[in-house]
Length: 374
Image (cartoon, rainbow, N blue to C red; front, side, top):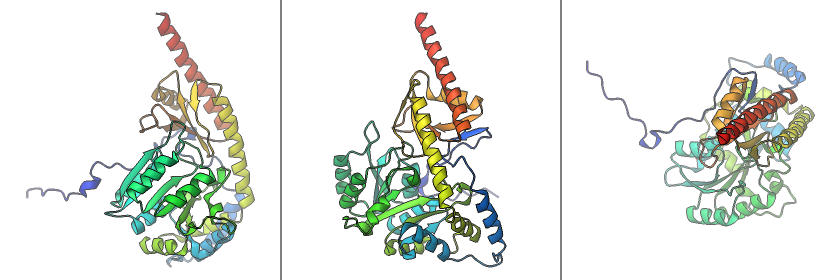
């Protein structure tokens, strides 16, 4: 029997690749911005105890009521303003399924988190963007022109911005909330590392009048040391929450993840200690990088973007990998030519990275000097 022609996929998705980072067996993994520390031992003990109470033959709580109530208490909102999902990426997907689609557009500021564009395209939503300046700041005149031209249903703002590191000042967030015609979705996956949060605009004392258009997205993957659980959430107006509930699959958040997230919220002080350690180490790593032949940018996240000046980024990446150290290679990403990104690890991991990077850069410098002499 002759083979039939394959069923064609959507034409607009042909050539679209998935979002992946290398998963390599190394001793020092500093490429995916995970927490370098596991959750507290007490958290694991409490989760194990509560797992015995789960009826595994029954579907989980579809509305994740207890988890939403705990998050609402943490942020001083009502549970009607909280939506939970499998990682912040599913939160973004639900938003785009609810508000995007054919004939609609989103706006973003490049370079930024690639999945904002990627998920928009998966949902047949047009993407329009403007470019940050050479310090990766948003030009508000460009931003105003963009939202006026496109009239986006969603304007994405990643703060702190991945992969560049800067958080947006409160006045920038307020300006965009005032100007953007649709929702302003502030992705705060790294928000706990930053000095301020867009959630402050939702506080009772805020003079901002369009907070019904403000959506703040967070994840348990970074500061809560729970990347394996895939848990994210948003804080937004109840109408936005209802829209996301309408696009989520039934029983999409399993019972184990709900328990893990709820128990984590009993350990806020331990989370804050981890954030303080990472921020302290970030400062130490940044200071060390400032003494090397690299260009860096300020970071309010748990990573630092840098550009080697005396050796190609790919060579640096390879030499680090040879030392069993894995960082993120951004060198071919648009707007990030020759850049690498390093996650802040434990003090010992950071020491290994800095030592290996210094040696690699020195080797490049010696090669350039030798070449010049010839």
